[in-house]
Amino acid sequence: MSERGKLTLLIADDDPEIRYLMEAAAGRCGNFGRIDVAEDGESALNLLRKRDRADYPDLIVSDLSMPRMDGLELIRELKRDPNTRRIPIAIITSSNIPNDRQDALEAGACAFIEKPQGLDALTRILDSLRDCCVSDANAAQR
Image (tube, rainbow, N blue to C red; front, side, top):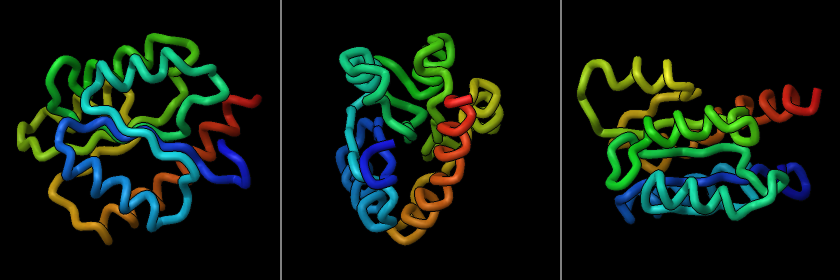
């Protein structure tokens, strides 16, 4: 968690408009002090590998379908690593493939968000995910 109780967020999405919308929603809900963005799962993973564990995000919101490394691959990579396995990851997608939700949740996603969502809806969703981040941070400290 960043200073003054604000959370840190990493958004991984190949669509710049969605990244912008997610950043705006995170700014509106007021829970996030630092917001990082990556254009795909591989970029998100590389960003995390360059950071100290203390600088890892409190929450990752990742698109499901991205080039180079998709959201499922990102979840699996992060859950394999003892340093990143406790970071909550929410999947956001426009996919209508029936098994995508189940696959994401089984891989370790804490939430599955369907696109398109407007700014108000995304703000509410990100605000509600704060409890997930705080619970995981408390569990990691034990």
